[in-house]
Length: 274
Ligand SMILES: [Zn+2]
Image 1 (cartoon, rainbow, N blue to C red):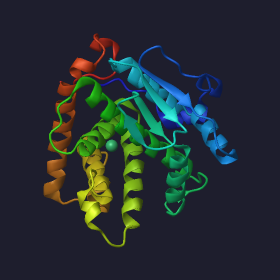
Image 2: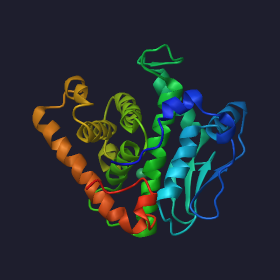
Image 3: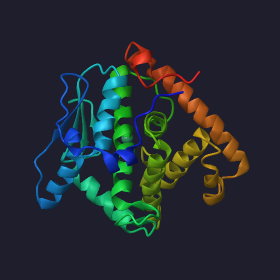
Image 4: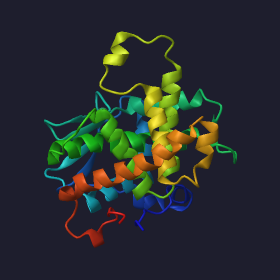
C-alpha cells in the first residue's frame, strides 16, 4: 500500500496556517519563488498560494521522492506559462492563470462560490486544477532532467503522470484529478469551431484530455469511481480498457522514474505497487 499525504481537504479545514506560511526554500530540489504582484488582485492570489497546504505538500512530495539533477524553481507570478523552461530550470505560472481558472469554474453551476455542502467550491476546484497543472510541468522537468524516453506526445505522457501522482501521492487525489478534468471540459465547451491549428497542436484536444483523466481515475479504482461509467458515458469495453491502461501507466512510469527516485524506497511514499 502506498503511503499517502494526509487528506488535503481535512488539512484545509484544520491545518495550522502558520506552518504553511513559512517560505519553502531548499538548496537543491524544488523551491518556490513568488514574483511581485502587479495589483491588489494578484496580491490576494499570491497570499493564497503562500498559505496553500496543497502547494506546500506538492513541494514536500517532490523533495521527499525525487532526486532532481539540478535545482528546480517554481515561479509564481511569471510573465508567461504555465510552462517548464529547461534553460533556467524553472516552472512558470502567472498569477493570471489562477484568475482564468477561477472564472471558468465560476461559469459552471456545479461549482459554488462558497461551500454549501453540495459540490465543490470554486476555490477548491481552482487549487485542484493548479495541482494537476504543476505536476504536469514537473513531468516535463523530470523528462528533461533524467532524459526519460517518451513515445508519442509528451503532453499526453505528462498529463498521465500528473494524474498518477495525484492518485498515488495525495489523499483523495482522484477527486483532485476530476476537478482538473472538469477544467478541460469547460475549456473544450467554449470551442465552437475547430481550426486546423487545434489538430496541429502539441496537446490533445481539451475534451480528449478530459476523458483521458476520467479514464485513468476510473481505472485506478473502478469500484470507487463506478459513477464515471454512468455519468460520463464510458462504455463497458472502454471501462475495462481503462483499468488496464491505468495499470500500464503506473507500472511504466514507475520503471522510468526509478533512476530519478531517492535511493531508499522505504523512506519515500512513491513505491512500486507490487
Ligand atoms: Zn505541457
